[in-house]
Picture: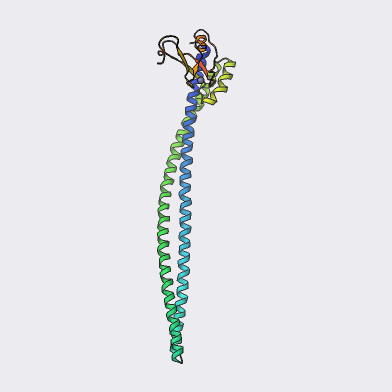
Length: 250
Ligand SMILES: [Zn+2]
């Protein structure tokens, strides 16, 4: 194959590997970030649940105090019942006692419900706490596995970067400038093979990068010259499949 295009293809091969390693690195880093986010969400849920539990407890404590005060009042009224001077006074105190007792029964019910509610919420908070412990362990596992993998991929990337410098050194400067301009757009895939369709002439030529039709001129010139030609549609650098490496595409 023509020397310049061969050097460019080699460079693309290294670029492709760099892109793949970068993608895996990003994936690894994202795994840690998303597990951390998951853990943070559980922690926030626990905090909300725990606060709810504390509020319920506070409410039920308040009701218990209220109840105690009312019972004390009933106690006092019972004492004054004994010192009632008239039947009318006696009946009035008795009515008061009964009113208090009825109120107290309601407060007692409410307090009971509040305590049950607090227990339910408390159990929810405990369940979340369990999940947090599990997610925390999972985060540590992911972090540990990721740290090893990130170190391995980073070393690979360093190695590939050195390979890229070497490969780039074999490409003429003008061609390299064009390659470097195109490569980032296509994640390192700056080059596209010219697909030749049809068994007999006139063949149909297609850009292997964007699948648009190509002028036959590109293939005709590349058959005899080591020239940098780009796809009119996507701008990728075109090359012909080296002879003997696969037959024309159908
Ligand atoms: Zn194209």
